[in-house]
Amino acid sequence: MRKWIVIAAAGLLACALALGCGKSRQTYTTPQGEKVTVTVDDSRGEKGKVEIETEDGKVSMTHDAQKKKISEAELGAPVYPGAWVEGTTEHENLGGPGAKVKNVMLATPDSFDKVYEFYKSRIKDAKTSTKASDEDSETAVFISGTERDMLSIAISRDKDDKNTNIAVTRTRMPAAGK
Image: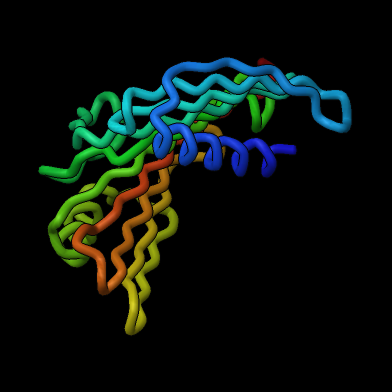
């Protein structure tokens, strides 16, 4: 079910942003009898938000074509200088009651190596750090924190892209017994 929610959200966001459909709210019933409420809010393709709510939790995805900035306090991680927000995804309760996941996609025209060195120097407590490349792309991942409060930073750039992409994911789980 969770995979279906994410696929549906991505599809709805793409449709909403392409069509500039304004605001709508629909409730559907799955073949299994579960109610799913989908809210789409779009401002002529420049900004958009899709929110999907089920009995298990809520997923929201946003897109902002205005190259919005974000602070380190909002992100919960170092912000690469000059990077802008491409979009965000937030999940509530999908990993269990009280679970929260926030994913922010950033972009910058700076080189992959420059972005990698920035995060390497700032995520010193990374439990996992990988870097790989082939003829078409470069990727790196830093993971730090605990199972209950985890930070993941994924950096990628395809050889033909103009920008380096940075995906920052913060996962917070409630303390045991809560």
